Length: 235
Image (cartoon, rainbow, N blue to C red):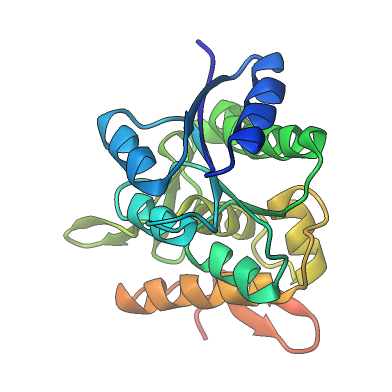
């Protein structure tokens, strides 16, 4: 069955161009001209991905992204005519899996969509997904893309977004290794992210806040002047 993508943009021409290119690649596409319609459709039947414009009348793309993240970790690509650093950071903070400034090449859009699906599907189909990697008091369920805190009473879900999960999964798979911000951008986003490396810092900050809320022993260590790492040892 073809993967379903919701394209949400108030500009009809852009919706039609994106739809045409995605359908040529075998994806099913539904179009929505505002956030309210897209959210109602999402609540009725969640798609496999959403491509959301930021600047729309009524509910903005950021608001739509935030509402979806309250319910699910469905992959989201944010697009905007405002190529501003703050927009990119807000998009990542709200759990978007990618950010593309307008005007964009339809072929680049397709490449970004494929990259996100490839990353997610690759994790699900990896032979090692039968294993449940652990680090300190965290355990990963790759088939479900789920991270839990292990306690004497049982397991507690941490409810990470798709990008947060990708970061945790990558770091635990490569624990005890130090990665620069550029390396993390390349490995987690799967290409050179258009923006500065503060996107990594913002993502780490958000993950740390969730870890603190759940009082986990797991921590993301800052290696000053270099990057980040995670280890099994507790200082």
